[in-house]
Amino acid sequence: MDVSIAVLGATGNVGEALLLRLAEGALSGAEVSAYASRAMRRDSVEYGKATIPVKVLAEAADSGLTLAFSALPAAIAQRIVPSFASRGTLIVDVGNNCAGVFAGPLVLPGVRPIPEAEIARAGGARTPSAPGWLLGTVLAPLLPLGAHTITGLINLPASAYGRAATEELSQQVVASFNLQDPPRRHFPEGLAFDTLPEDADAGEWSARELVLGAELSELFGINPARVGVQVCTQPVFTGMTAALHIRGVDDAEAAETALRDGAGLATAGRLRTLRPRKVMGRGLVYFGGVRPDPSGDGIHLWVAADNVAGAGAAVPVALAEALVASGLTTRVEA
Image (cartoon, rainbow, N blue to C red; front, side, top):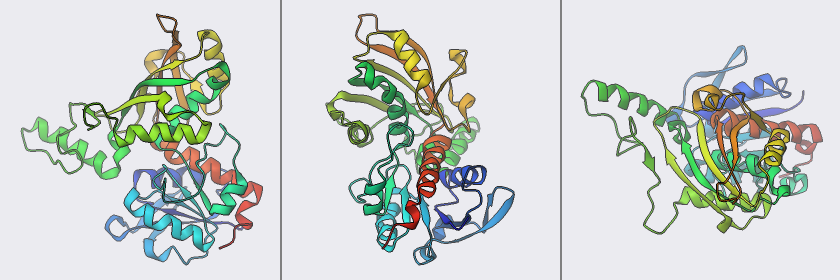
């Protein structure tokens, strides 16, 4: 396979998940390279059964790559991603860190047709944030049934903030047991044995919560005012859960059938299995507990998904596989 692929930010949680997914999928025959900033560099990372060296991020721009995944923090991605697109390397902004900075369309494979012409013009695409992926995957099959408003609560894990945040949660747990002062760089108010709601002023929504409305609006044309999902962070290492209320759907049985047939969705035999630890490493969104609202105003359901394996790896790799299969990677010019 004459395709060269780079993972930018290969030493982080998402970068490693991308490498794992690539090694198992249709692009396993491609030439894959790993890059990271100097501060986050390790000598090597695992790619399938091989070990590949980690190169300095600055060396990636002029390497003649076919396609690159950006698994970089937002501040770095917003500088790097547009420059790659301008050089002719097809770039995938994983997690929508470059909204408003990079013109690539927001894409959720399997849920909506991939806009190849727009991707070619922009030099790449963005994939949704982890909460946006979860909501978009659930909402897509319910829109034909009349769904128009989604509210509820999403519980994020420490891994939503990167590898260092996950390690800090572990250190906070140990320090708490040993009656020591825990590290508080990523979670200044602490996270171990606690819950952190989004820090927003009274009467306002947080930036992270507003992004959800913008993403669903871009994907489906929904009025952002119809998206009122709160976000909080729980003391778990990886995996999201959500309690959702979707209005406009009158028939809970029809909704469950639509969800079972929906792209990127799966269910479980027992609702209790839909929790972060049980979905770790899986690239699907799992749903259960579909029930009518007591007042007849729509339906409620419970959702669980691995933010890293799903939004971080399964979605962008599925997009890349489709773009390579379509031949688009050979038609993008600087």
